[in-house]
Amino acid sequence: LKRITLTIMRSGTSPHLVGTRGHGHGCHLQSARSLRHSTHAAARRRSLVSRSSSSVAGSVTPDRFEQRVVEAINEEFPQNKAARVVDSLMNYVNGERLEQGMQSAGTFIRGLDAKAWHDPKDFPWLVKLAEAHEEIAAELDTVLADAEAAERKGTAVWAKAARAEAVAYGPNWRTLVLQDRGRWEPSNTQLFPKTTALLKKLKVPSSEVFLARQAPDTGIAAHTDECNYVLTAHVALRAPEGGLARMRVGDEWRPWVTGEACVFDGSFEHETHNGGEEDRHVIILRFFHPEITATERSALRLLFDC
Image (cartoon, rainbow, N blue to C red; front, side, top):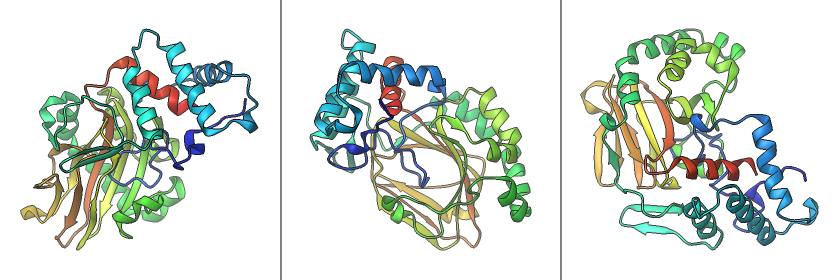
């Protein structure tokens, strides 16, 4: 059967599967570096979906395809070990939402610890990454110093947000992607070789890594990322002094401080504003909520491979 994605679902594009090509600071890709897969593994997972039905690919209806995916998950992960992932998929299909105070998500896993801000110290790899912020910033400065060379050597360097839902990010939001959907971007990682090597050395469990630039006197409008099982981390590389560049998650505003990290749950309403006179640069990483089990991560990967 040819490759099919859950974008055929009746609600349109599924947040379970879609990568953040727009690269706002939301989470629409639920993969992880630790779950990177080989071509053989991906083919095997697609074959699981294929084996669960004799339907012809071109005639698969959304309902039938969803059923086949559930059957494939249950075959690969017996004894209900991925029950929460199946529930998450079906909740999305049925239009159910997680609505609790300032938390709002259309794709969610039940029972996760829900808080707007997480303590960066709970993630040792993030602490070490923040300690190396000057090394990352030095590579950033090299890229910024010769924009033409970076654009020539890299891919979609300082690209605008691309998704329709990324309109909240505004026209001045720019990103440079190092990792997308658990896969390293070969040309852009060459622009940041030391940063890439450090991320791999620290075994950062990321699904996405990218540099983000926010221009002075701009902001990102209040929104939610519609997903509660992926967290987002920032390490500030260049931030205006005096707390002029800041972000609200839930009901609390916090400033970016050069060299410091923060972690938040994007299913809580959040917004940003750069009130300084210079660009704010951060490196952004997305990774699974720590209460998602290894089995559930693998089950989510099966969804992506479909």
